[in-house]
Image 1 (tube, helix red, strand yellow):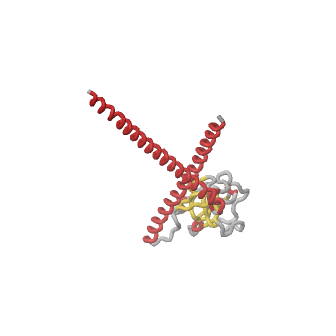
Image 2 (cartoon, rainbow, N blue to C red):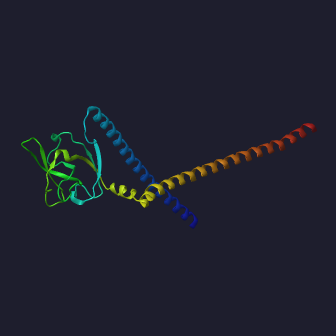
Image 3 (cartoon, rainbow, N blue to C red):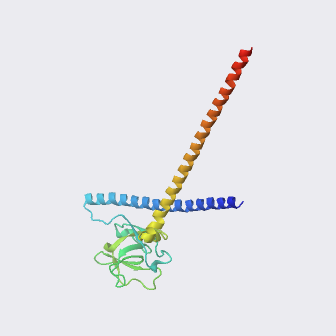
Length: 230
């Protein structure tokens, strides 16, 4: 009874572990596929821009948020995916943009904040006033259109944790190496088990054939003996 319950517990644990590792691996593979597709799109777009003689920024970009300035719209370690804006007409109040900040608090740092005001100067240039949703005040410096990297399309919650852990040796081992070894090991175990069962099946067939042959050998002389007597 104890052996049966222990065996069932081991099987359940294996199933749970296999499920978790499989989900992790598929999630990482999905992220890699998305990154690859984004790379291909950017490559095609950049080739087109080079041929056209345009010095545009890449079409799609992704940024990991490291400050709480946009909470609750965007949380720390969320990843935002941005699309390049080719014209000021594509932007309006309320849009969230990623830009090179000239604010004394964030000077030279890539920032993701919301547009709260747009002003057009007498020379036709656009100036954008931005503010973090979680900040009490607006950013002190207005942004030129040329400083904008892109408009936020969507965010991927907490995926920055994976990026953070993958950047460490422990995280790489825990998230990539261990699950991969576990899945490969489990598959090898299933393969050996299948081969073992097949080997047993073959041995059983051979034994059955031997038994049949021995039966024929035993029954054969009896029939001949009967015919001789007659």
